[in-house]
Length: 299
Image 1: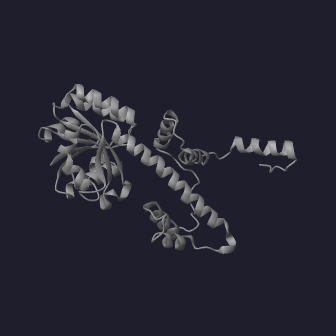
Image 2: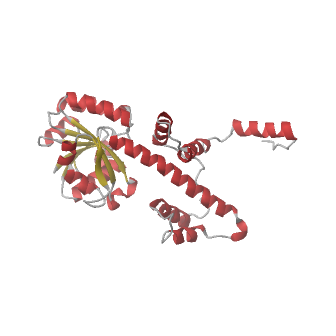
Image 3: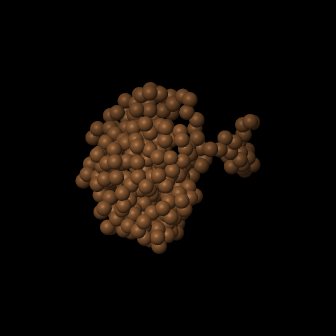
């Protein structure tokens, strides 16, 4: 199957390569010449016009561009070039509400928009991607060979999960769960690291947990690898960023009246990690001194 890939960054480039190795013809486009140059194994073009012209109708074009305004800007340029029956896939981390809006816009032009929540990160090229697809079932069925090639196996790791927006909604919740799991691992290893009298080899403990334990997971595999390379985690700043999907998950939980304390607190802990000079902690110390005469550290 022929497919166009817009966005040849690390994720998009790896997905394009996996598709090519799965027997598909992939035509890639990136607005930056450096991105096109880095995709040496791929057939690339230097404009969206050339990308559309290189694909037979009905076309399938996969977007791997940053969420938000870049997706809308790409659609602004792309939709006038497309024909009724063409399919556009947004494989980035878009907000599901934006995907619902964009799907309606594409429908008005006779074009299908599939929102595809994509998980797998830098390992997807080798291991395959987890794909949550939302949108028109017929359009999703047409692109089945593409999803089967990107997934870990044709019969697992992907699926059409619902109407427009459903794919990105499922991926949003997936990332919220990921926040909570990562926080639990981080806290557990921190407790073990602080218990100096035990002199635990944390990488060894992680490797033990990888087999037979109820807490085994890919995240634990990554933790074990990191601890073997750098047991003290030297050179890593205690600053944790977020892509926004954890925030969206918490906001959705509040709107739906669903209690989600673990995901919420894990998000707040990420925000806390960025406070080099916490005013709130200073206030806590001052209050303890005020009511209990507890000492404060100068700094």
